[in-house]
Image 1 (cartoon, helix red, strand yellow):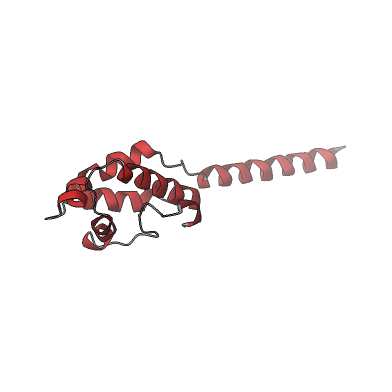
Image 2: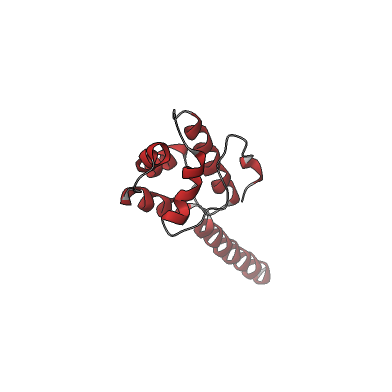
Length: 120
């Protein structure tokens, strides 16, 4: 009987350790609201050109820092694509220049034809 109790305790300890490890790896999914908030300072450059606002670059870098999973990358892509489509006069070439102008990269290009389900 004592042997069964030790085995049960051992299994419980291992299960708890695995649950704690899994919980530490769970990442929150990025929301469209977060993406919009981070990238709103980029709209003036995307439409008018000129200088890229430092807040825009900060937002792009923060977005890249929080995009962890493929699902997060696809969600951000979809949000950016949908948001860009609602901005009159947006220049997609300027939109796609932003990461390089801010000293970073992007795993996708945004165009009306971008298939965000295939990025990441």
